[in-house]
Length: 339
Image (cartoon, rainbow, N blue to C red; front, top):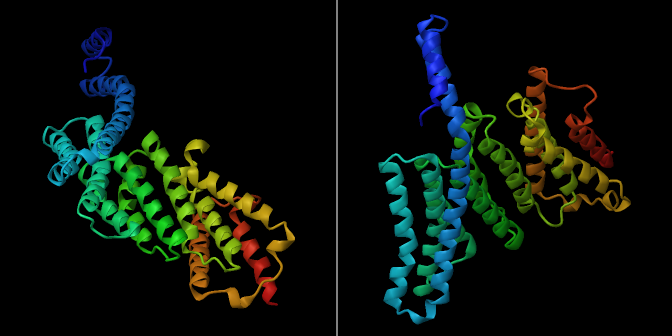
C-alpha cells in the first residue's frame, strides 16, 4: 500500500536537506504504512471469520434440510464437501501466503467443517459413540490448525470446544475431565507468544478474557457435588486469577483488557457474599471431604501462594489491597472449624 504522496515528498525533502537520515526516513515511512493499513485489516479479519462461520453453518443447514432426499452414497459425498472446501481454502491461504483475514477465515471454516463431517459420517453409517468422544476427536483434529495457521480464531474455537468437553464430562457424566488440562496446555505456548509479541492487541485482549472464563466455567467439573470445600476451592481459584492479573503483562494495560483481574475480583466478591449466609458455615462434615477435592484445593492454593510470592519478588504487592490476600485470610478462617 502506497503512502500519501505528500508524505513521500516531505520525507524526500528532509533527506535532501540532511535533516533526517535514510534509516530514519525508512522508519517513518514504515510507521505510516502500518498505521494506514492496520484498521481495514482488522475489519477484514473480523468479518472474514464471521463470514466463514456463517457460510459453513449455512451449508450445514442446506444439507440438513434436504438430507432425507439423498441416497447413502450422496449423503457420504455431501458429508465431505464442507471438509474439502475448508481444506482447499486453508491450502490456498498457505501456498499463496495470503493475508491474515484469509488465514483466519479459512481456519474457522475448516474447524467447523471438521465437526460437521464427523457427525454426518457417524449418522450415515450409525457409528456408535458418546458425546465426549466426539468432542475430543473434533478438538484434537481442529487443534492442529492453531499452529498450522497461527490462527486466533482457531484458538478461540479450541477454548470453546475444550470448555464444552469439560462441562459435558464433568457436569453431566460426573467424571473428572483431566484431559481438559492437556487441551488447555496445547494453546498456552501460542498465547504466551502473543503476550510477548502483541501484548496490547485486540486479539490478545480477547484471549485475556477467554482463558480465565474457560478455566472458571470448567473448574466446577472437577468438584464433587457433595463436597463442603466448594467455597474454599473457588476462593483459591479467584485469588489465583486476580493475582495473575496483577502481573506486569496484564496490569500495565487498560483494565478492560485484564480479564484475569476482573473475573478474579468479581468472583471473589460473589463467594464472599455467599459466605455471609449462615447455611454456608453450618453442618461442616469431614466425611464429605473427598481425597480428590482436597488434592485440588491444595493444588489451587499452592499455585495462588506461588503467584503471591512471585508478585512479592516483583514488588507488586499492595499493602491495602485485600483482594490479593483474601484467599489466605479465608483459608485461615475456614481452618478454624478443625480447632
